[in-house]
Image (spheres, one colour):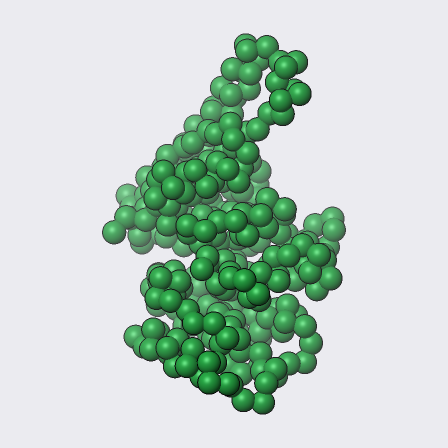
Length: 276
């Protein structure tokens, strides 16, 4: 089945790096890649611009998108892949949501500027808001300058307090299917033993992943969750971090900007945020 992948771009090196990662990740899959550039001009600015100048700005953005498409086609040369370009005058978040619905997008892939300048931030505000708001498909966030490594190890942190549906886990499975990856389920043990609800959710999670190569890792609580996840990624050689975003989840806390500042959580590897 053909995949539809949306990659927003601002024509930066960072955005190009996300495109390169996406092309390599899906090298063996039939895919349509949609390159989206959203350019919003404030109303106050609009009143000072002539129609002629506005058309010129739109045409320049379209020319850059066409150049990007040509560059991707020459860099990729993969018969499995085709490329479409979209120029939107909406703001980025509105544009992404619209394209996700209209083109039935399976995955959004975005670059992030990483921990530059304000070291506390692991992703830019646009990406944070997108991860919070996108409800129709997952978003895969690629750290700045991250070189593609086949994702043979996927970390999936959970506290077992919530039942994961097959719909949510489908995205994790599809990711694992790409490279026959091992799913490493990480649980930070803040309790002496699991309660009945946690036990049930653990059993159903095992059932859902029955045909997959997975392992469960019980990690003692020794610091904040963000640092423990960082350490887990480092120690086990994790290639992608995947989490379901729901109310009161770990990921909801991690993409809360004040918490990012406080905890200093950095995306060292690509980070997939799965909507509930």
